[in-house]
Image 1 (cartoon, rainbow, N blue to C red):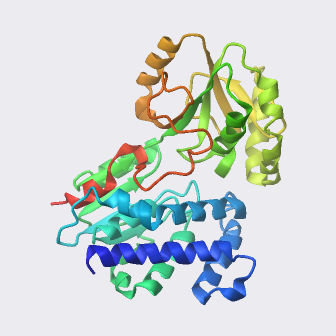
Image 2 (spheres, rainbow, N blue to C red):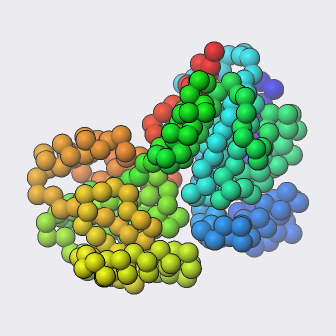
Amino acid sequence: MDFEQRKNAFVALGHELSEALTQKNSPENLNIRQQQLLEIANTVHHFNAWFSPNHVEHALQGICNLLDENKLKVWLERYHFDQQISKTVGIVMAGNIPAVGFHDFLCVLLCGHQAKIKLSSSDSVLIPALAAMLTAIEPRFADKIHFTSERIGTVDAIIATGSNNSSRYFEYYFGKYPHIIRKNRTSLAILKPEESFENIEKLYKDIFLYFGMGCRNVTKLFVPEDFDFIKFLDEAEKWNYLSQNNKYMNNYNYNKAIYLVNGVAHFDNGFVLLKEDTGLHPPVSVLYYEKYNSHELLKNQLKEITQEIQCMVASDNTIVQNAVSFGNTQNPGPADYADNIDTIQFLLQLP
């Protein structure tokens, strides 16, 4: 396959996936692979209780957006996909949110390489289902996609995503190969004193989607001195469906008990805890905040933590340049690379 054939196959995958989501209530209008994907999407929570059907659907819709033909064209026209030797690229995927490894899968195959994939045990169903759809559309991809349940073994390059702890393991085993090794990142939001109700409503999506477990989820707020925490939590009520998830509520109840026993000051609306803390990585069900009274001090503070942040949400560009707009942290475009490392450029320059 040449580059255009590879790209067109992914565009076709996007069309099939979009049609499946649009026609989910009329599966008789869909082909068998679309029906099978919908069945998997609706039952994947049996394999991982964190993957609720509505969150899985949102993740799949995000993949449709990545595979939009015009977005792919704009994204990829900056690169030179010359004829090159196919390499074997290992992909160690995370499993914190549904199909989170798809972008690496896409990049490796678009560049003409072979993908040797080690799935997370938390997300072992969705990526193979999408790979099956892709190979049904373009059978020549079948020889390019390999899943392994063992150690990933010998490869020409590696892309591995995990925690700060697992990154040390990855460095030990894969440091000799050309690599991208990703660590813990998170996202934050800076609120103005006069932040609009519309922006606050959108911010809840950035916070609560995927139970707050993605690197693009906002887990830390910087708020003005007179911020109304009670109103903020009261107006988040429409997201209380999170409390129907037993795993989430186990975390909430545990953290609430710890705070109560230890006398830790916090706000609580029955499904999320809001705590003042200088940290960036709260436990599931907890949202950290800090107050600020000086834009200059805040900007200096943000500079110190840039390497730990995936997204900064703000409506004031004088504080954060290139900020993500409210409600859009979980709607990345194809060029919004994890850890801001250009995966395509890395893959095109493999020796």
